[in-house]
Length: 389
Image (cartoon, rainbow, N blue to C red; front, side, top):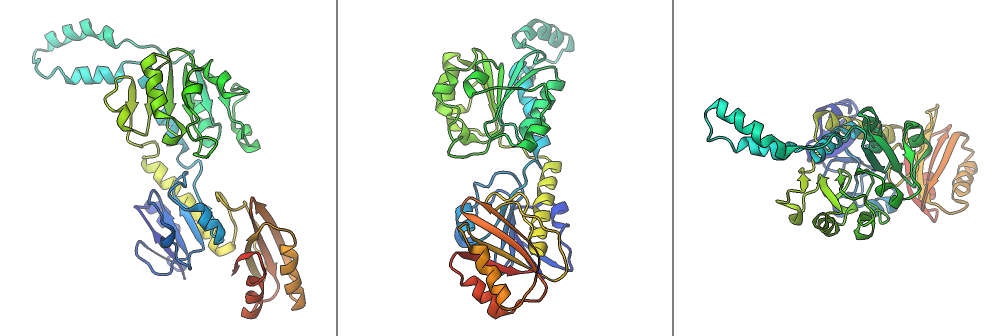
């Protein structure tokens, strides 16, 4: 029986993926095999020695001590793309809010509570509506920075709305490139993109290379009167630099999902309370994806969508499976195979993958390994963890 400890409110559809015959799932549970969470800030001392995997029902993992998990041989899974449609739809909303006097118009309409005569109200509205005049997004240029799961959906959506779409992503994968419509124009650098775009939307993770990516220098290259939209991560933008750009008139509007004190009460800023993925569908999709990845890892040793371990998938065969994590140094696998050979244990199938400083092996063997063999493997210098499935 596997034990799963949950933090936060995990969508029921995700919890239902764990069969009652094989899994015990609860928010208070001792010696869990895996942790499943959303936004809970996970401290290193909350990860007991029994934990083999951590699943994040969402994309970002800045609330999880990933380096410490890697050192302990614990894969950290996330759910990239599961909330992509929810974010895409909110970006569409933000583009319209930046273009039209929608927010101001709504607030003005709410202020008319003292008028009781419908005719008088209609006459006033006809007179005042010109102050809420905006522009259409049709025919405008959208610059998409980050063309992954969300960015590619945003690009497709904008094209359907009649916008010209330009994009920039220095780390664009082959899979991501296949998802992009051919109409998306690739820019060679950020300056080229922001100088041409009427709207710039960000879809990047927080890395050292992306922290404060939108800073004073880049904002100086923005097209005059353009709008910046950030539904990725607050840390990607230097907020003080954005305020300065707004006050100078370099950019016209800033719409984001990450309110900060210096942005409150500004008419040129549209703030939302981190609701990019706050839909029932997105929460369910994230929970299901995270749960399925934990299940496949615990039952088969396979790794999909881990932020710290290599993607590893090996079809199950007969026999027993060893799942071994080790430091990514030469001759580690040969040491393990030598120990198996010394006991005349036949290897049926195997797969070795590496990522940065860690390597991961799935080895299917014909006979069950005893505790003495597992101890020998564990004691090989550089071995991080060993598990029999």
